[in-house]
Image (cartoon, rainbow, N blue to C red; front, side):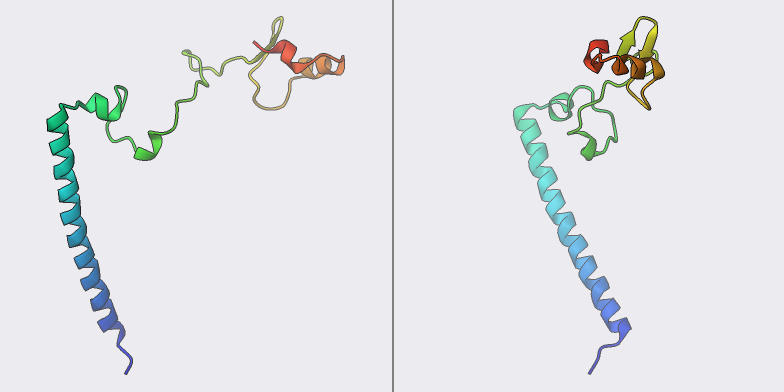
Length: 112
């Protein structure tokens, strides 16, 4: 005999509650072991998370090194220069650079 939708949903709810309870117990055990290790070794937050760690930063950001794209002024740094002509390397190549490359020069010559 086929079960009714309400019965299946009740079973799902019961299993979800059991899973949440088991997870809470496991988390409590893990947290307890971590606290014990912190006390035993005298660890500081800086040792655990780094000196520059900000509060509430996602764990996925920990493995990503910060990019040095912008100068302190907030502008994008110049990557190529020829006299007064500059280009950050973003967007289309400027006319002055296209002309120099057309003359047979290499783009590496203009790197800052």
